Length: 371
Image (tube, rainbow, N blue to C red; front, side, top):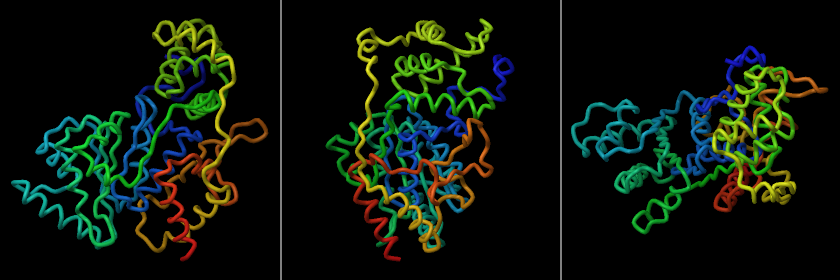
C-alpha cells in the first residue's frame, strides 16, 4: 500500500523469514560465521538457540540457500511428530522410500549415508523449533548420530529452538544427547541502538529505497526501546509506522508516530525502562580472539578448500557479505555483492564467540596453518 509513496520496490519489514533481507550486523554475523564453521567442518550435532523473533529461521534459510549441490538436506519446521512420523518425514526428504519397518529403514539409511560419505558428499538434517520435540524423538536423533566411521560423521544434524531447548538438553534423561553437541550458537537481540539503526536502514536499501533515513534518530532510538532489540518486533513497528506515515502524508517518520504505533501494538516500554534508557548503552570492548585470527582463518580456509569436500556453493556470497556499500555519502551496489578488506569478507568476525567452541576454532586454524 505504501510502496509507491516511499519509492520502494518491495515491503522491507514483513514478518516472513525472507533471507533476501538478512542484515549482517556484528551480532548476527557472529552466529552465521559459527554455523558456517560447524557445517563446513562436519561437527556432527549443532545447536542454535535464541529468543522468539531474533532471526533463527531466517539464518537457517540463508544457510540452506547456500549449501552446495553435493549436500543433501532435510529441513523440518514442524517438530510435533511421533517417532514414526519423524522418520517418514526425514526419509521422504532424503529420497529413501523402500522400507517397511524401522529395522529396514536404519539398514537402508546406513548404506545410503556410508555411500554418500565415500563419494565425498554430505547429508544434513535441520530441525527448526526443536524445543518442541518429544524426549523420544530427541533420543532417536542421538542414535542417528551413531552413523559414523572411525574418523568422520556421516550425518550432520542442526537443532534450532528457543532458550527452552537448552533447558531440555540439561534434563538428566537427555544427558547423552547433550554430550554429543559439538557446537552451540546463541542468537541474541541487538545489543545497542546502532545495530538496530543499521538493520532498519539496510532493509530499506534492500527494498529499493533511495532514502535509508526515513526514520529520524529519535524514532530509531524509541523503536529500539520498544522492541527490546528483537528484529521481529522492529519489523512490526516499522511496517505499521510506514503505513501510518503514508496515511498522514508524512515522508519522514518521527518519534511521535512510533509512540502511537507502539501504543496500538501494546509495545510501549515500561516507565522504569524509559528512565534507565536515557544513558547510552555500553558494549564490552574486549575481544576473545586475537585481531589477526580472522585473517589467518580466512586465508587458511581458502588454502584447505582443495583438501576437503565443500559444504557451500563456491559462488555463494561470503559470510559477512554487504548487500550495499556506501561511498562519499552515496549508496551503490558493489557488483558481486561481496565486500572485502585485506582479502577478508567485510563483517566476518569471530568476536565474542562462546567458550565451548573457542578451542575448536584454535585447533582448526592451527591445522590449516600446518598444511
